[in-house]
Length: 127
Image 1: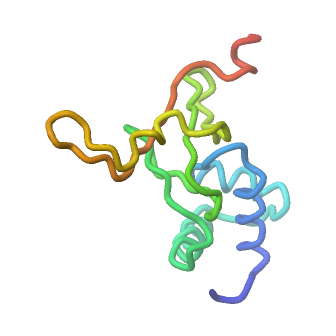
Image 2: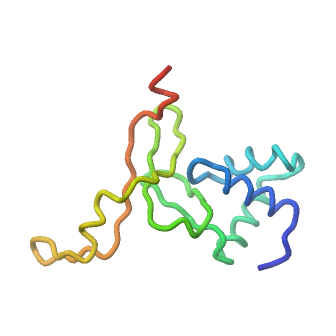
Protein backbone atom coordinates (compact mmCIF):
# COMPACT_ATOMS: atom_id res chain seq x y z
CA UNK A 1 0.00 0.00 0.00
CA UNK A 2 1.21 3.46 -0.82
CA UNK A 3 1.74 5.99 1.93
CA UNK A 4 -1.33 7.12 3.85
CA UNK A 5 -2.21 10.60 2.56
CA UNK A 6 -4.69 12.93 4.24
CA UNK A 7 -7.05 12.42 1.29
CA UNK A 8 -6.84 8.63 1.53
CA UNK A 9 -7.42 8.76 5.29
CA UNK A 10 -10.51 10.95 4.79
CA UNK A 11 -11.86 8.48 2.20
CA UNK A 12 -11.24 5.49 4.46
CA UNK A 13 -12.83 7.28 7.42
CA UNK A 14 -15.92 8.03 5.31
CA UNK A 15 -16.24 4.35 4.36
CA UNK A 16 -15.54 3.09 7.88
CA UNK A 17 -18.27 5.27 9.39
CA UNK A 18 -20.89 4.73 6.68
CA UNK A 19 -23.96 2.58 7.45
CA UNK A 20 -23.45 0.75 4.16
CA UNK A 21 -21.54 0.84 0.88
CA UNK A 22 -21.12 4.27 -0.72
CA UNK A 23 -20.96 5.53 -4.30
CA UNK A 24 -17.89 7.60 -5.19
CA UNK A 25 -20.03 10.76 -4.96
CA UNK A 26 -21.25 9.75 -1.48
CA UNK A 27 -17.64 9.06 -0.46
CA UNK A 28 -16.71 12.54 -1.67
CA UNK A 29 -19.58 14.19 0.21
CA UNK A 30 -18.71 12.38 3.47
CA UNK A 31 -14.94 12.82 3.15
CA UNK A 32 -15.28 16.56 2.50
CA UNK A 33 -16.44 16.95 6.09
CA UNK A 34 -12.84 16.38 7.19
CA UNK A 35 -10.97 17.25 3.99
CA UNK A 36 -12.77 20.14 2.28
CA UNK A 37 -10.47 20.38 -0.75
CA UNK A 38 -11.06 16.82 -1.92
CA UNK A 39 -12.15 16.33 -5.54
CA UNK A 40 -14.01 13.54 -7.31
CA UNK A 41 -11.01 12.55 -9.47
CA UNK A 42 -8.94 12.10 -6.29
CA UNK A 43 -11.71 9.96 -4.77
CA UNK A 44 -11.81 7.68 -7.84
CA UNK A 45 -8.02 7.38 -7.93
CA UNK A 46 -7.83 6.52 -4.23
CA UNK A 47 -10.75 4.08 -4.40
CA UNK A 48 -8.85 2.21 -7.12
CA UNK A 49 -5.67 2.18 -5.03
CA UNK A 50 -7.50 1.05 -1.89
CA UNK A 51 -9.33 -1.70 -3.80
CA UNK A 52 -6.06 -2.96 -5.32
CA UNK A 53 -4.54 -3.05 -1.84
CA UNK A 54 -7.50 -5.08 -0.55
CA UNK A 55 -8.56 -2.43 1.97
CA UNK A 56 -11.95 -1.86 0.37
CA UNK A 57 -14.23 -3.96 -1.83
CA UNK A 58 -16.55 -3.17 -4.71
CA UNK A 59 -20.22 -3.87 -4.01
CA UNK A 60 -22.52 -4.59 -6.94
CA UNK A 61 -26.23 -3.92 -6.57
CA UNK A 62 -28.48 -4.70 -9.54
CA UNK A 63 -29.03 -1.65 -11.72
CA UNK A 64 -26.84 0.55 -9.50
CA UNK A 65 -23.56 2.42 -9.87
CA UNK A 66 -20.50 0.94 -8.22
CA UNK A 67 -20.40 1.19 -4.44
CA UNK A 68 -17.54 0.59 -2.04
CA UNK A 69 -17.16 -0.58 1.55
CA UNK A 70 -14.32 -1.46 3.88
CA UNK A 71 -13.00 -4.99 3.40
CA UNK A 72 -12.91 -7.61 6.13
CA UNK A 73 -16.48 -7.35 7.36
CA UNK A 74 -17.25 -10.93 6.40
CA UNK A 75 -20.29 -12.21 4.56
CA UNK A 76 -23.29 -9.91 4.88
CA UNK A 77 -26.22 -8.55 2.91
CA UNK A 78 -27.58 -5.11 2.08
CA UNK A 79 -30.85 -3.20 2.29
CA UNK A 80 -31.66 -0.40 -0.18
CA UNK A 81 -34.31 2.14 0.76
CA UNK A 82 -36.63 2.82 -2.15
CA UNK A 83 -37.34 6.37 -0.94
CA UNK A 84 -34.02 7.91 0.15
CA UNK A 85 -31.96 5.43 -1.96
CA UNK A 86 -29.45 4.87 0.86
CA UNK A 87 -27.92 1.41 1.16
CA UNK A 88 -27.45 -0.15 4.59
CA UNK A 89 -25.33 -3.09 5.71
CA UNK A 90 -27.36 -5.82 7.39
CA UNK A 91 -25.67 -7.49 10.33
CA UNK A 92 -28.26 -10.19 11.02
CA UNK A 93 -27.28 -13.78 10.35
CA UNK A 94 -27.58 -14.85 6.75
CA UNK A 95 -31.06 -16.23 5.98
CA UNK A 96 -29.83 -18.28 3.01
CA UNK A 97 -26.54 -19.60 4.36
CA UNK A 98 -28.15 -23.02 4.72
CA UNK A 99 -28.02 -23.28 0.91
CA UNK A 100 -24.23 -22.95 0.68
CA UNK A 101 -22.86 -26.24 -0.61
CA UNK A 102 -26.33 -27.81 -0.92
CA UNK A 103 -27.28 -29.46 -4.18
CA UNK A 104 -30.59 -28.07 -5.38
CA UNK A 105 -33.12 -29.82 -7.62
CA UNK A 106 -31.77 -30.18 -11.14
CA UNK A 107 -28.22 -30.67 -9.86
CA UNK A 108 -27.45 -27.00 -9.12
CA UNK A 109 -24.82 -26.56 -6.41
CA UNK A 110 -24.82 -23.23 -4.54
CA UNK A 111 -21.27 -21.94 -4.00
CA UNK A 112 -21.93 -18.25 -3.36
CA UNK A 113 -24.83 -15.83 -3.11
CA UNK A 114 -25.59 -12.15 -2.71
CA UNK A 115 -28.81 -10.78 -1.31
CA UNK A 116 -30.14 -7.23 -1.45
CA UNK A 117 -33.44 -6.41 0.22
CA UNK A 118 -35.52 -3.43 -0.90
CA UNK A 119 -38.05 -1.42 1.10
CA UNK A 120 -38.18 1.60 3.41
CA UNK A 121 -35.56 2.49 6.03
CA UNK A 122 -36.78 3.57 9.50
CA UNK A 123 -36.35 7.29 8.68
CA UNK A 124 -38.46 7.04 5.53
CA UNK A 125 -41.17 5.00 7.29
CA UNK A 126 -41.57 7.81 9.83
CA UNK A 127 -41.95 10.44 7.11
